[in-house]
Amino acid sequence: MDDHIRGADFAGKVRTADEAAALIANGSTIGMSGFTGSGHPKAVPGALARRIGEAHGRGEHFTVSVWTGASTGPDLDGALAAVDGIDLRLPYMSDPVSRAKINAGEMDYVDLHLSHVAQMAWEGFFGHLDVALVEVAGITADGRLIPSSSVGNNKTWLELADRVILEVNVWQPVELEGMHDIYYGTALPPNRKPIPIVRPEDRIGQPYLECQPEKIVAIVRTDSPDRHTEFKAPDDTSNRIAGHVVDFLSNEVRKGRLPPNLLPLQSGVGNVANAVLAELDDGPFRSMTAYTEVIQDGMLQMLRSGSLAFASATAFSLSDAGMADLRANIDSYRERVILRPQEISNHPEVVRRLGCLAMNGMIEADIYGNVNSTHVMGSSIQNGIGGSGDFARNAYISLFVTSSTAKNGTISRIVPMVSHVDHTEHDVHVIVTEQGVADLRGLAPRQRARRIIDHCAHPDYKEALLDYFDRALAGAPGKHTPHLLDEALTWHTHFLRHGTMHLG
Image 1 (cartoon, rainbow, N blue to C red):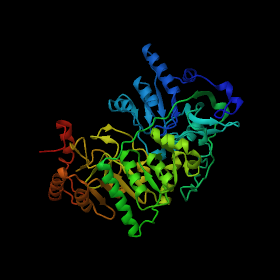
Image 2: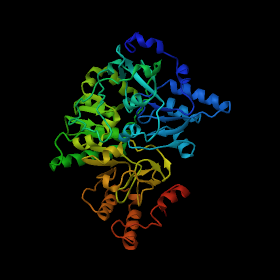
Image 3: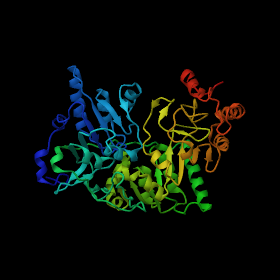
Image 4: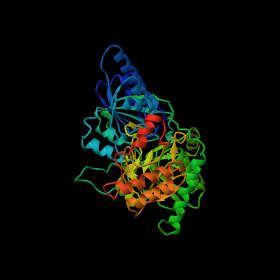
């Protein structure tokens, strides 16, 4: 065959995308690869969407349930959602078509902490898995699978599914071989053993995914790129947030609470996250490490410069330029990058042991430090919780970062009460906006409120927040966490009615 499909025994299983899609029945539950736009199947989902659309055109019911690692791309989530082909989706999505269907009540969605998905699937909480549809970079002569640009839940899908369809994507560099660390030592209680990772660079598994050959019913050859994310150049707001983060970490080092090379970094995805990584790259820290979910452009730059010595994750999420860099320097990166299953990359035991510094974005925070990272105005899903909770609750220091306003200043991201809670005040150590840093560690609720308002709120909303807090102190029935319940969410309702949170 070739470098991507090395075993002649697999030639008889090569099918077209349409032939593979024809093997998926109405009502099937499909475990698909994919994590933050990387490593998802590119051809069969589209063929399945066409088949579903044709069935609907004949008046026939046809839907499937889709489990993944995290978000995928428009050629998977978007294509299937557009033909009303998804009955239930889990655990994380960011596709606009899927989002609209979910918020319209036309698709069921289960949002989960990413470290929990594999375990809950094994426990049978989600039901039976019929098909695994997994992209790989290649198949070795002895039948082992070379993972592609993400690992996600692929190990679990391949083990649990009755039947397996593989997409061998020749666009994926076959030189990824050797970059992965697939751990097969997990078990359910009461047979669990400790995950033996004490440093981000520890390898505890093998470079390949395994699959029983008799389960493979089709192999589809593809040549399609991942969904690349083009990051904007950092704006003034992002740069100010990044500067505050670096100043905070530098102060922790000066106080002896962090070592000079910090502790392993975890960073969420997006433009603010890349700005923080760029600031860290230019900052005083060297020989840093990362134990995170996703490696984006900023971390590749840190690996190139040497400020970052090693990175462990479950996926890449790169721009076109970042992918070109990975291809050009893949031999070097393979020595300093590990991609793991997400149940390991996000494992609470390991995160706590390593003492990760968790840095994640949010939609809003309230004056007591509760964080909403998933819902707009209380009831509309934006994205899933992803891995932010896996890291925030177990981190050595948990930081949440955001601009202080949104929608041209009509929304304050610091509000009296969040309209949806993903991370309680107990899991939030530090909040950072372009206005400043609120270090909440060791503070009682009323102290937290003063600090968040003083340091993180935008000046346009600070007076209103202080007024709410002062009146709550005077009028709330309880003084520990004072709230005016008939008023706490009026900022959100005022925005829904008038297009602004300014109450005047």
